[in-house]
Length: 249
Ligand SMILES: Nc1ncnc2c1ncn2[C@@H]1O[C@H](COP(=O)(O)OP(=O)(O)O)[C@@H](O)[C@H]1O
Ligand SMILES: [Mg+2]
Image 1: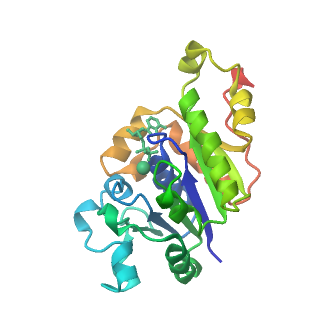
Image 2 (image 1 turned 120 degrees about the vertical axis):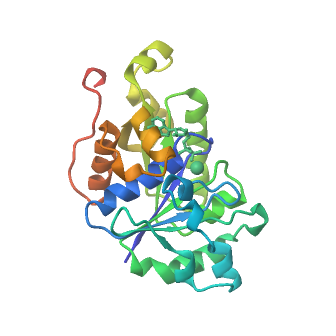
């Protein structure tokens, strides 16, 4: 049965879409079949990141409204075997209700090893839609106080929605900048504040941005791709060491 993981953060711009897309690719490279459901209604971005934006005709709202078959709104990503995308509605008024999304994911989850749900910023109704079908949640945070506040708030919202299996991803980590900022002693302090077990650290990586923003994330071979590969291994239950920066241990 497919595992459904929602990628959330509270604050916008922490890297949810980047993490969703690159983690999905990392899982596919380990021979898994993965569906990304973009739940960022009105602000979808994963189609752009996968370079699929020009091919899209249907989205989740068309399936729900009966305008097309489910498979018409699921787009294969040609560059990576096993990766599929279901785009979010482009129109904010086409937001899907949480229970409808749950019913929909129930019908497709057995066709995939993993479904990754890219959630919107905030903890409003569209966040609930993204969260309700999931059996796991990853919170993406940066190392700035506003991002950490978002992570704490989103954790409360996840717990309120009955989600107990929650992990933390620290994204855009740059040790030099972290030291210069000098707000937190070490990453443990951030993990403690978020009260969430860490599953991975993704470096601040301009190469990742270049590949992701140009619709070619599968070509990235920089250190961030290794970080995503390690998180994928941990999702698969492998005992892989966390890539903690040595000096910060
Ligand atoms: N690990 C990273 N290193 C450098 N830039 C990143 C990283 N992750 C995300 N970004 C950049 O941060 C910005 C926001 O990322 P995005 O994935 O769109 O965030 P969200 O979906 O949370 O709004 C983008 O410009 C993206 O390229
Ligand atoms: Mg996004």
